[in-house]
View 1 (tube, rainbow, N blue to C red):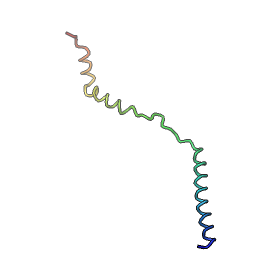
View 2: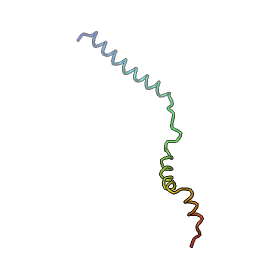
View 3: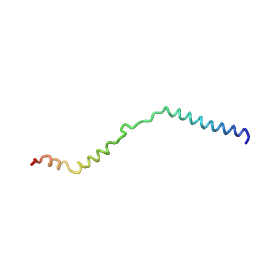
View 4: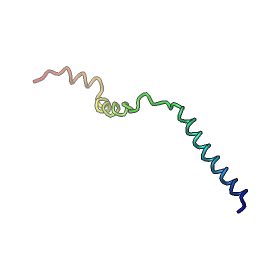
Length: 69
């Protein structure tokens, strides 16, 4: 290989490496938004609510008004 091709390859490799380093430095300044609630509590509420949702409010009132023996 001639000296010209070696220099061209070295310049291209250095350009890619320096370009990636500058891109990393530039992207490090960005702040990514964090989710306000990382844990979705609605999943737990829906499971707990399914037990009480199986009885209607009228049935719950009947059960709460019955005298204990």
